Image 1 (cartoon, rainbow, N blue to C red):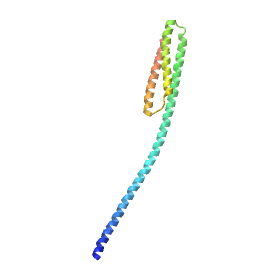
Image 2: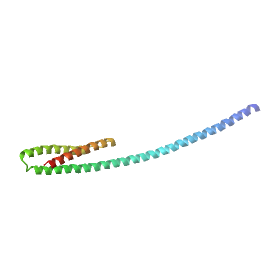
Image 3: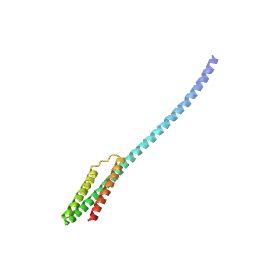
Length: 152
C-alpha cells in the first residue's frame, strides 16, 4: 500500500504545481489582454476626438473658402457691370462684340456661383478635388475678365 501511495503523492504534487504555474500564466495573459483593451479604448476615444476636431476644421475651412470665393465672384460681377457701363458709349459694332463676350463671362461667373452654392461636403478627398477645379476655373475667369477690361 505504501508503494502505491508514494507515486500517487508524487504525481499529485507535480500535477498541483503544474496547474498553479499554468494558472499564473493564464492570469498574466488575461491581465495583458485587459491592459490591451484599456489601451484600445483610450486610443478609440482619442481617435473620435481627433475626428470631431478634423471635421470642425474642415467645415471652417469650407466656410472660409466659400466666403472668399463669393467675394471674388462679387468682384467679378462689379468689374463686369462697370465695363458694361463703359461700353454703352462705344459704337454699336464694338459694343455688340463686347456685350457678347461680357454675356459669356457673366454666364461663367454665375456657373461658378451655382457650383459653389450647390456643393455638399462629402469626403476630404472629394473636397480637395472640388477646391482645385474651382480655384482653377475662378483664376481662368478672373484672367479673362482682366483681359477684357485691358482690351478696352
